[in-house]
Length: 114
Length: 110
Image (cartoon, rainbow over all chains, first blue to last red; front, side, top):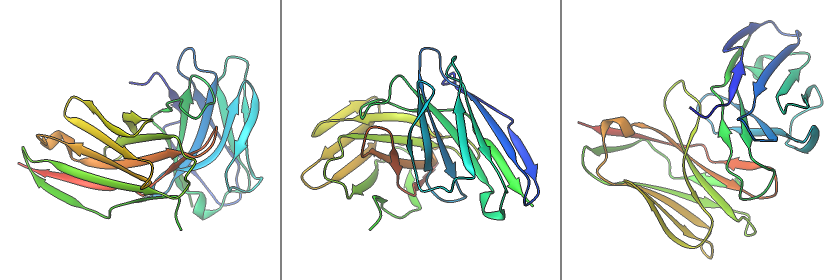
């Protein structure tokens, strides 16, 4: 167990809806990164939050947005859901935002868009 | 060219054998390299981190890094059925992003 928790575990939405996914980082970690993992592929970086600020973003459209709270927990929001958004969404926490910092994943949220 | 590429699987090895997994990366300035294990239906679990050239051993796992060749490998010695999983190679190419390969699925035959 990494101490990183995510909710909900599973979610089913329809195209066009909005969804909010939540993540609590490991104790003592101030950095949360979000990844999308489609079936049979490696995780793809969405963005990272460090001390409540977006610290970097991958190649995802603006309808993917996030927040980090003072306790370093984080949310991922996706608007106008598309069928291709169906995936496993992973958050990872790390001690700091540095090149050598290990990232530890939560159990993930499985999102299905119908 | 993909940032991180892994040898295509699946890889099937008999119990007790050595499983060898390979990974190449494209960005020469990469400094941090990680191997994750992912069981079916679960999230990735960090099993090895390596930052400098050479070998790093942890139990039955050995990671090898060659920055000149832009190559990382993972050896699993005395493979067990519980090692059956997908292994993901990840590279930190800047301060915040991990780039992952597509993964290599390993099956250990009893």
